[in-house]
Image (cartoon, rainbow, N blue to C red):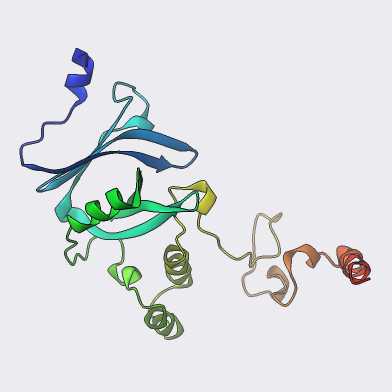
Length: 210
């Protein structure tokens, strides 16, 4: 290890409880490094810690700021974890499921009203649907909850959150939200929103039946 690497290594003042090699996932990138868990702080030290690129930033998160943690899959393998801190999250992929479970066992999440709406972390879909029906949470919050519950995350482009296409017009500088023609026909799939294409797809479907 050279002097630059010592300079970039964090000063850890409390006892280290856990240390493993893992990979941090950000959109379009896999960053190899080491995850360290002390009594009060979580660290991720990228292998290329001397790089000036923001994507190789040292992650240093006080455990008191964690508001939620979820088991995740990555490339169909159940060995990842996503931790939520304020309005952002971090996705880490461990070498094995055993490493991930040991990591989970050492962290206790305290109730926290910080940045992210804590109600969005309620594990009950029934409860969240009831809140949405009563207008207690917005459409965006409800859709984000469903995406999160389904394992989707902003950290991974292959599992990025999805939202329904509702609007019909995207070529106008202004949009009348009260006009029915501003919205697509939700009874029809996206492929046949344009009436000129509907006959083609119906014919193609009919041919496939024979």
